[in-house]
Structures are given as C-alpha cells and as structure tokens.
Amino acid sequence: MTTAAPTPAPTPAAIPTSTEYHKALRLLYVANTISDAQWSMLRAHCLAPDYTLTTVELAEAAGFEKPGAVNLNYGRFGAKLAGRLLYTVPPKEPQASVFATFAEGGAEAPQTRWTLRPEIVAAVKLLNWFPRLAKHKTA
Image 1 (cartoon, rainbow, N blue to C red):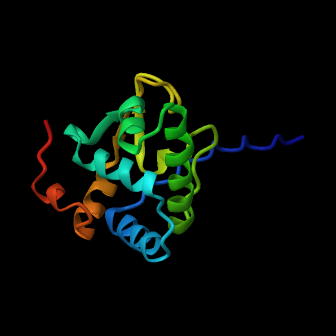
Image 2 (image 1 turned 180 degrees about the vertical axis):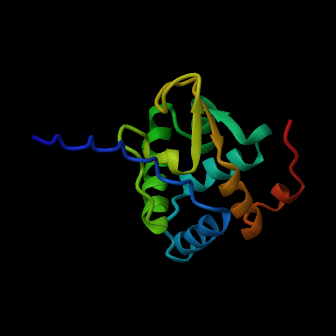
C-alpha cells in the first residue's frame, strides 16, 4: 500500500513589482475608481515619515470620525488594486496587505502602524501624483 505524498503548503503570492503597481494604479486612475477618501489617505501615507501612519492618523487624513472606516475604505482600494494586479490576497490577510504592511496590531486596531510597500511608493513617485513625494525623505 502506498501513501500519498503530503500536499505542499501554498506559497505566498509574490508582491507585485513597482512596474506592475504603476500600471494598475494608472488603470484605477483612468477608470476614476479611487474615492476622495482613498486619495486623501494615499497622499498622507506617501508623504509620511517612512511611509508609515497609524490607523488613527489615516482616519484623520480622510476626515473619518472612526478609525474603523480606514480598514473599510483602504480595504476597498486594496481589493480594486489587487483585481487590477491579478493578485490574490492571502487568506486571513486584509485586502490592504496588497499595498501595505502592519505592525503593532491588526488592520482594524487604532494604533496599528500601516507602512506602504516600497514597490507602491516607487510606482506613485513615477506617476507624480503628489509632487512633494519626489523630494520626500524618510525619517
């Protein structure tokens, strides 16, 4: 009797390249599918030291009264971006993980630190959406 080989664990999806982010972001822009709140958060995020903000700071940038709105709105942005990238967000990961990493809590915690992935920062710089970003230095 032979036993079946164990099924290998799925490999995490590779993070898209800055070129892939550039194309996907441009398509979202042309389709006019980035909301005002998403623009506000992305701008504040791109101009923040080390491209890092807390959930509360992102909420303030978007004009939200409650930090939970950040996860919802940035999650929608992440889902749209992932769709354009043909990227599958790993199970149990927030949709925003396609463009950000999280420290000191989950995506919904008020003091969680959200950091933009370097690849998306590079793509936004190429798009020149936020002119100050070209001169931006990390802390």
